[in-house]
Image (cartoon, rainbow, N blue to C red; front, side, top):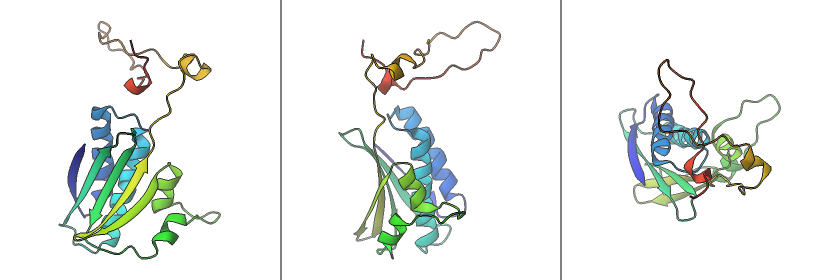
Length: 171
């Protein structure tokens, strides 16, 4: 679907979040875009923080839409190992402790995996598509109508809620 590179500096996570949000919105992917942006930011934070590369290094990130409509976000870094991967993936914050890292991604529904490569490793998050309600269900009846493509006349108007195309009935 797409790939990009982000410098491993203090802006890496926010750049990855912003780019993920923009890219998935333009691609009209049927996942929770805000959750996917946060998940992408978490993966980028881990790569920038734990790979040991200098701040000017570039970290590749890739977004792949699978045939199952699942979104796969991958981040590659130069470190081949992932020390304590099982602990990092299953970590739970203690009462009063601030949530962090892969726990946040898991709470947003991502399945996390990693694999070593010749150039380092790839850490990936698999994100399920939004569930499409049956059109006669109570939830679907409450969905806002699709946005009209013709804007109302001046003065400026309030933005309307937008229904993702994956949730619109086929004509």
